[in-house]
Image (cartoon, rainbow, N blue to C red):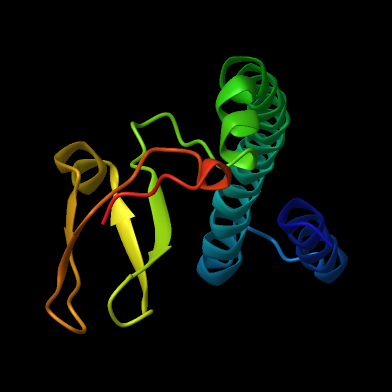
Length: 139
């Protein structure tokens, strides 16, 4: 039951009592209070209707924004799914240390320098970019 419906119910009770607002001060006050309650109820009903309309408009805007996000950011999401986040990624390689056999992870910087320091055994070794199948490996 809305506030307006409740006020209408109370108004019906008041009218059923057949109080004379001309002779009774209390009846006059109750009548005025009911008038104020009726106005408040009407205003609240109007605000509820406006809020419902705003909710509908916000839902439409939310759907539109979602569609725009999908259209604009679709490529970026595909890149993220492929493991590319749009930033320059460093490549890492795993190679065994020729001295101790420990697997080491080296980055592009170490590859460019051509020399790797093994943190396990402390040995240094040069990286070979030759094919392992031809038998010519540098130490």
